[in-house]
Image (tube, rainbow, N blue to C red; front, side, top):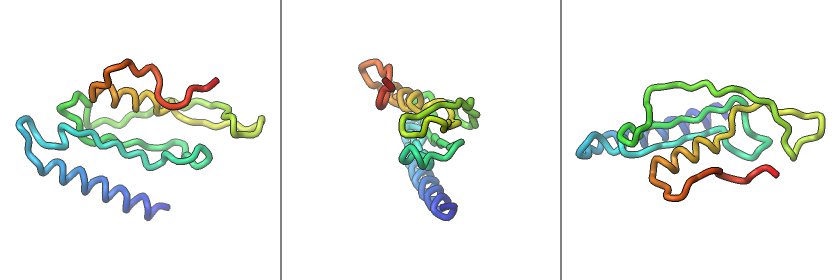
Length: 118
């Protein structure tokens, strides 16, 4: 899996470089685009903790660039687990997806993204 991650990362960087090479009125196409790469998102049982999300570009869209964020860890019980199992994860990525939608002008308020817990 490490080799897979290296290949995927190289492809994401290749795409970012291609976007950066295209000039626009205010910067580059990368500045007007958000690349969201989340290599750890998969089926619930396969999610690595901590997982890493990479946002590239978006400088002209208001994305604060050049930062690394450490997300607080929380321990939860998930419905697919046995009663004595607990999972330590970060804050759900739904907030990130809502924010990206807002950047691109999603008209209706995004109060949630994905399936709500009952």
